[in-house]
Length: 330
Image (cartoon, rainbow, N blue to C red; front, side, top):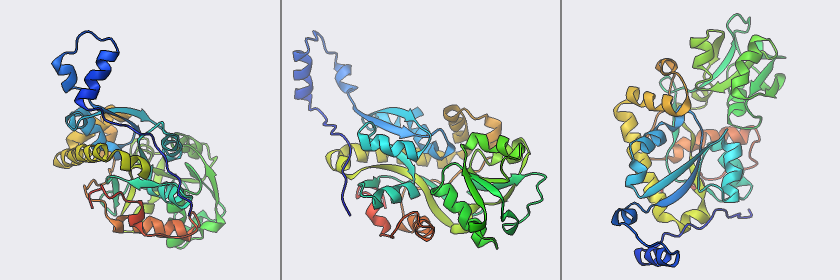
C-alpha cells in the first residue's frame, strides 16, 4: 500500500524566538500577559451535531485554552468534505466517521484517530434510524423490496448500516433502490412520496418521528450491527502527528475533560449542544445521544470494519490498531 503523508508543520516558538520575532517585526512594547497568552493555533474541521458535545464543552469551558491551544473551528458537512481539507493542509484535526477513515487508509492516506468520539450503544445510545412515513404500509425489511431509499451519501456509513439492517431483518438490500439526499431534504421527500424510506442520524430521527410526527422508525441500524461500536471520531495525518505530538496530547487532554464534563451532567450538556448546533432545546429532550468514553477500543472499530468489507466499501480488512495513533488513550 502506498503511503500518502499529509498536513502542515506547526512549529511552536520558544520564548527567545518569540521575542526575537517581535523585535524584528518592529513592535515597541510586549506586555507580559501577551506572552502568557501565546498559544498553539490549530485548524479543526467539525460538524454541527450532538456527537461533538465533549468538543463543544471543551471550547466553552476553556479546556483547550488551558491546554495551550487556540482552536479555530470550521464547521463542515461531514467527513467527505473534512478529509480532503485535512489532506490539503487546510485542517490539522478533523472529524470523520470510521468507514470514511477505513476507505482513506485503504487508499494509502496516513489517517489516524487521536481520541475517542461517538459510540453507538444498542438500546440506550442508538443514533441512526431507518424511517418510513407514519402512514406507510411498510412494516418490515421485506416490505422494502422494490422501494426507493435515501442515504446522505452512497457507499458510506449510513448506506452500509441500512443495507445491513435490511439483510439482517429478513429482507434483501440488493432489491431496493438507493438514492443520495442531504439529511434536511429526507423528511420533505418522504412526505411528498419522492422516496419510500430513509436512513438518517440524529437529530434527523427525533425531529421527523417525535417532533413533527410524520415518520415511523422501523429500526436502529447501528444497534443491529453490534451491541456497541465507534461511529466517528477525531483524526489527523500521521505525518502531522509526528511533528506535533505535544499539540495532539494537549488536544486529547482537553477533549477528555470535555467527555468528563458531558458525562457528569448530560442534561446540562444538551444546552451547549443546542447553542452550537442551532437545535431547539426542546428537541434535545427527546433526542438520543451517543455515548462518550475516553479510551478508544479496537473492539469498537471492528464491527464497521467487517460491515464495510462485507458490502465492498473496502477491498481488504486490516487491524483496527493501524488507524489508532500511539498518542490516543487506549
